[in-house]
Amino acid sequence: MVEYETIEHDVLIIGAGGAGLRAAIEASAAGVSVGLVCKSLLGKAHTVMAEGGMAAALANVDERDSWRTHFADTMRGGYYINNWRMAELHARQAPDRVRELEAWGAVFDRTPEGRIMQRNFGGHAHPRLAHVGDRTGLEMIRTLQDHGVHQGIDVHMECTVTRLLKEGSRCTGAFAYERELGKFKLFRAKAIVMATGGIGRAYKITSNSWEYTGDGHSLAWHAGADLIDMEFVQFHPTGMVWPPSVRGILVTEGVRGEGGILKNNKGERFMFGDIPDNYKSSTADTPEEGWRYVAKSDRDARRPPELLTRDHVARCILREVREGRGSPHGGAFLDIAWISEKIPNAAEHIKKKLPSMYHQFKELAGIDITKEPMEVGPTTHYVMGGIRVDGETQMSSVPGLFAAGECAAGLHGANRLGGNSLSDLIVFGKLAGEYAAKYARDNGNVDVPQAEVDEAHREALAPLDDSRAHDAGGAYQIQYDLQELMQDKVGIIRQEEELLAAIGAIETLKKRAETVSAPGNRQYNPGWHTALDLKNLLTVSEAVARSAVIRKESRGAHSREDYKDKDEQFSHVNTLLRKGPSGEMQVSQESIPEMPAELLQIIEDHK
Image (cartoon, rainbow, N blue to C red):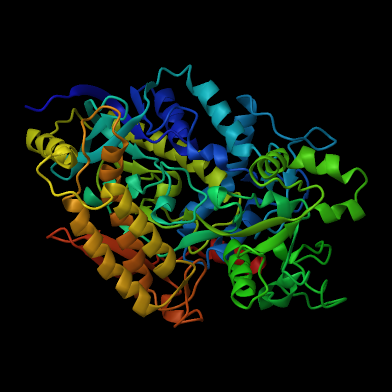
């Protein structure tokens, strides 16, 4: 007999990070009942680990900044395969969303005039990132939670969704379990918003927390939603590489934004050796200073090459390591201490601007970043691909299912600019909540077919079946094998032979996962939780590998050893993943709709 608690909401939001909280606030403000499900405790969302700031063209530090420049930067950083409507909405609306956070109590760093301070970040033409030291994501979550707690939102903490449920083609519910006691919950909802974050735990080295197992991507795909551009996985250039216990933990781009420089083991500032042509200046003074970020004004200040786009910096560090010029533990040196040559009381300045980084390295690596360089290297950080959504409403290809934040695709194209992630959360979290509430009001009561509930229940209990053969190491070993596979064969640099081998190996791992056993019962059983996560991890890993095979070029965060250059035939297409009639993953390419003339002119004006 199926035992579960039934809970009904007009709008159910899965994920309580920046996007989920902002969606919940907006939906609740529209007068509908809202449920918020989070895999961890409220306040522990991965958003709190976003450090450097949120990108918005407030023009507080440089009056030349505007939404048009921000739009052009985002499109250029995404290699022009972005959803241009999402990029436009994001650039236009981000300033209002940041000011809204300020009105709700966010305490931003300030300019001498008292305005919100903004810092430089990779790929942005002007200082654009509103920040709170290097703890911006934490302040965002604090502010949204403090504001949202008064909105009448029903929160279900430490609750994991295992399956989306449908009535016909419409998404009408979700099946979940409580992580502590293993009790099942059935959620009925007129609209559902996915805001579950990324897929980093599919890789061995990642900045992502344990929750990032690709739940939203996988749940949506298995429910029939389209995914796009899953080949574009961003490897942040600066994660910790030593000691091994903290390998992959993020070192914010804010270190470079505040003046940090990258050096190899010869003490060379190697980023000057590989500057893309469209970033070079026509009025070079010296080889090391003769470039500036491309813009129309000669007043543009020279900006360090360490603030080129993340894909480029990550590849440069990898090159230094492969050619024998890396740091002792397979990375490069990031030096902020050198600013003592330029700034009085530099140590206090660093501690004020980068308090989390100072304590992180002091506590975890025994390094004082005010006196010595950090050892850093690329770490799996973000996925640009995800659930395909309508640029205006954020609804997926499944009626009633919306998505926002990292699990939704479109805004970032082939590569995300630093700082665009946090403003992405609040811009599209708001829109998803707004239109999910409207959908819930405009569409009648829902039903959840009992057969779907029964199937979800059987699937969730399957790993606890004592009659199953025990895989050596169980779910943990399968997850470990998958992470090794993805790191080695579907990592920063890819080639066809290895990608095809990875796809074959994933199929083998899927067969192992189908019969994996998690001994014990439903109470306090992390082995069972890991076994249930495997379906999501394997789904998103297959999506990345299959998408990477079909894009036979190098573009943005997707680098092919066997196709090293961009190819014009891939310049105006997204990679589309659709569930086939037998449940197989079908991969194709879809042309991007033509951009309006006024947006094309903005890009032309900012070349």
